[in-house]
Amino acid sequence: MMQTYQYYDPQTGESLTNQPNRRPDKKGGKGLFKTIAYAVIFGLIAGIVFTGVSFAGSKLVGRDAKNSGQTAVTSEAKKSDKDKTDTILQTTSTANSNASIADTVEAVMPSVVSITSMSVKEVESFFGSQLQEAKSAGSGIILGENDDELLIATNNHVVEGSQQMTVTFNDGESVEASVKGTDKKLDLAVVAVKKANVPDSTKKAIKVATMGESSNARVGDSVIAIGNALGYGQSVTTGIISATERSIDDVSGKYIQTDAAINPGNSGGALLNSNGEIIGINSAKIQDTSVEGMGYAIPISDVKEILQTLMNKETRDKVAEGEQGYLGIVGRTVDEQTAQMYSIPTGVYVTEVDANGAAAQAGIKESDIITSFDGADITGMDELQSLLKTYKAGETIKVGVAKESAGGQYKEKTVTVTLGAREQ
Figure 1 (cartoon, rainbow, N blue to C red):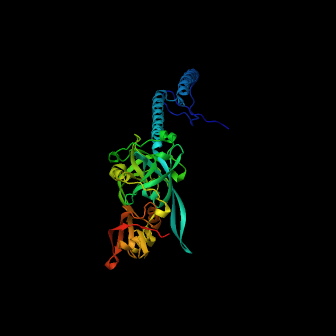
Figure 2 (figure 1 turned 90 degrees about the vertical axis):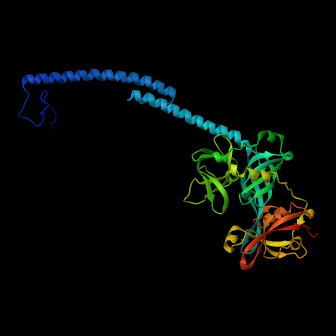
């Protein structure tokens, strides 16, 4: 098969291909072959020189790249030097950033605890209402202390209805705890642990958290979330502040929105700024298959005074069974779903009243709904029973009661109740 070559007239530049009748003259042919020969010789020499330079350059650049941990690109020598510098600076910056997060977490972890709560829930079944023991996990932040107690902030829904509670510190030590005060509307609670029950080694391993100012938080600021995710123990997630002043349906207050992962068990845990200061208490996550990365935290600046009030409340421990106060009612839980369905308040719906009991003497009647007990919001019968175990017979307290008025509307009022003694 005949090969076709492309030739050009060295003077006119005109293509000589496909012009068989035009042949270069003898003299022109010799000049052309000389030109081609020189070109070949020049190309060989240039190739050798270029290969040598390229080899030497690759050796030099390769040595630098090996030292810096980068892969050399030798085709653009000047650009590669700049690119290497940028890459090294970027890598160093990332390493410092990771070290900073690790250092922040290490400094704050002693202030965050895991909370395990045991409660009794009323469950409807085919056989009617039954009481079942339930275990839940959450988190808390050591906010302060007094002479006798360590004071830990958490969410109300973490401790709601709890009959037995333990706090686990960062060294793995677990200690029994008590609810000191709650605010259901803002989903806040303060838990107390007696210092006398905390080993000395644990006291050295823990510390009170440093409060920040959530009012200074800006959208885009980096944040760190620490909490007892899924009850597995403390874990850490990072993200940014996605929004501030967010509202959540049926919940009071404004929230910090973040894309840092907040999972079940994180509730009550810490949301930190880059300085390791507490700017929020992790509280909620939008649970929807179409939503990702939308968690919410209670801004610490908005609730400092409320937390201080809860911390100053009297801590109540369980009293001996024979000394416990008696209210004298039979009731059923009105949960959120039932309350919305019938347009009534949440709490305990009174179905029976002991005519000689403390409730009857205070004016509480059937169909009334008990909404609070000694300043604590009541969400169900199990919570009311749990609270009563911490009060002695003869104590006088304030009870919030919603009474049905004309038109089926409920109006709340506060009555004074002197607790009676349970008949033996």
